[in-house]
Image 1 (tube, rainbow, N blue to C red):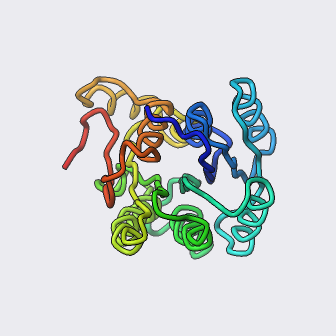
Image 2: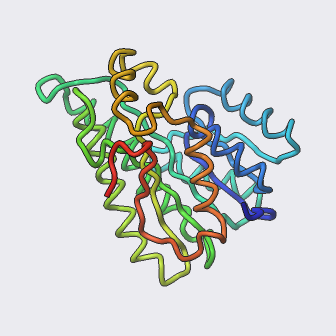
Length: 251
């Protein structure tokens, strides 16, 4: 993997699971990392400590990235810490929150899911774009659910990730002429707290059993792909939504 020495990376939702692994991998390659979090300062500080123990440099910044004013705060604090340049932006913040059918969710729940998963991706990209120059990279975290509609009760989550997938393609066209690459990673079943909370063991075992590789993926495997897309090794990859699901679904 090519070094990311001297690069500045911002990772939303970077305090645990896939976000934490992404932060650690980017830092291991030499990037200075902004670990964004909202709910858990403890998890964010633990991520920072893991990075520092390996000789990396990182800071934690609290911000609800579904709110434009807090995204602007995230940008201001990033500039204070590392200057007016961002080379790598990872829009990872997201969540399912609950499994609800069409008749069960209300407008408040709709705004929550769409805000954290899609609105955050749109406005974090908008706010940080003017800190990014040719050679920079935006990586969005979408989902296999964007392709297949997800499991029961995840219509809004799946739809929000479908929006992320389409936004990725649109931004690749818009920002490509500026030399900013935009890609997305679309994880399938990854062994994280997300599925600990929202997917039963029976379902997880069933999905793993029909996956060609016969297992769940890991957060580190997703992070390795993100780190590659962030590097100059991926300098001609733009506008892709890359599946990482053990062969369960593919184009």
